[in-house]
Image (tube, rainbow over all chains, first blue to last red; front, side, top):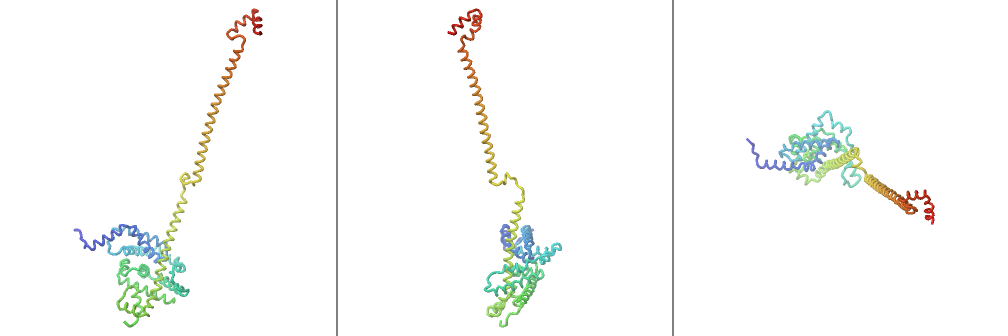
Length: 191
Length: 167
């Protein structure tokens, strides 16, 4: 016997499928965010680009199974988190260890420091603050780093992060809280 | 809420766990608002830097891909007839045209030489014929009468005839 969905759920599924029908538009809209999350996690642009493509390929292959329970962005981030997790677990690649050795130097990263400092002193302080967060973020355990980046770089809500990472909301809060405490402590040490 | 926010409460606020009491206190307490700003500022810098860096890296990767594609295209061997520079194509066409013209002129000369040779042969024949006619006309005795003339000359008539001819 065929299961009948409630009208509102059926409508959501229809909307989600309509959104995914134009997959080119989905790629154009979400690819930068996926790449950003992965490159911030790995600090390796080439690896991040490969994994972004892998993520989008998986999304394309799985698009018929998308039920619209979360937004497309959350669904794609869920795939990205899984791709990242699988690669980090892969003993052959060891992305994180490799990228820690050849990681992007902070001097390079600080060149993207947003303008707006009113004086050389303010610019110096901003640079020190950025350096502290930069180093702290990449010293975090994997799960803490993931939720930290999803929250503070990708601006995702706690429930979205929970959906993307497969954690419970309470677990996300715990990881995020610890990550933020670590980052704050590092910033305070510097200043 | 009179007391200031604790360090943990600031972190709770930052991660999105917010209460109306904390919101009210942050609106009314300048010290706590400043402290919150101090916590938010470095993370906002980090957010901006990561976004800029990511966008830059994406651009660099696209540029690298374009360069690789261009290098691949340059390495692929190609047939000159399809990809020769324009000047080579024009030079080739010009040479072909010159050859055709030269052959055309050569053929014309050859034909003209043939016509001239035939005309010359005809002129020589005509001249020979006219010379022969002239010789016949100038003979004292017509060719058909020459045997009779020879007999007469042998029988003594030759002198008188000869004399008459001399007259």
